[in-house]
Image (cartoon, rainbow, N blue to C red; front, side, top):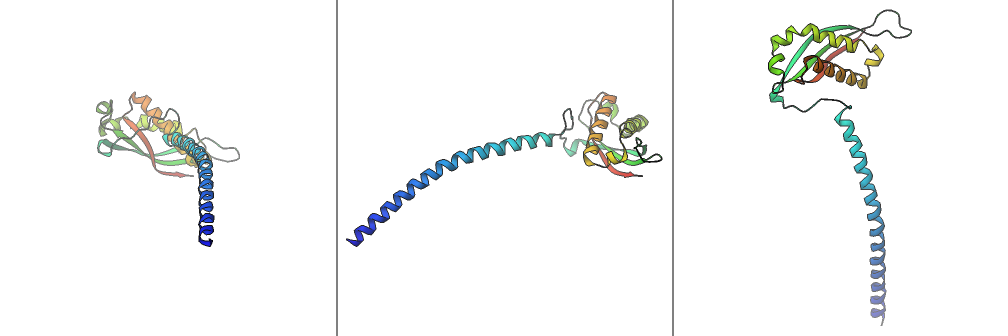
Length: 174
């Protein structure tokens, strides 16, 4: 009789366990779906930030069809800050990434042609960087914004997007 009673108690506990597990699964699945949706929403927002600012024309170009042009080192007079006496300067070295397969590269992309347009390129860079103060340009966000403005300005100047990226290889402030 004791064996039979023990079997009935074990059976009752198993049934209670199965019922509680089923209840727990239904409540966890609902919360899991909500958590999954939240993670998806966050991932979509982060993806937008990774793509860059609106209007950014930066794109992925294979290294095999990339050529670089080093803009001669520039000394840029920065916009005056309140409370700072004298002119502040930025010494910057810029690298332009050129897409050898893009429209306009054949016309403007050769080293000789880029050298010929170097004063115009330097002027565009001076205009963009000179609109910042030294403290503004020290922040990475402002540097990214300046790169995007330089890129847009150069693409407009050449009326082509064969220049697809602007990088600061060295930047110093005084």
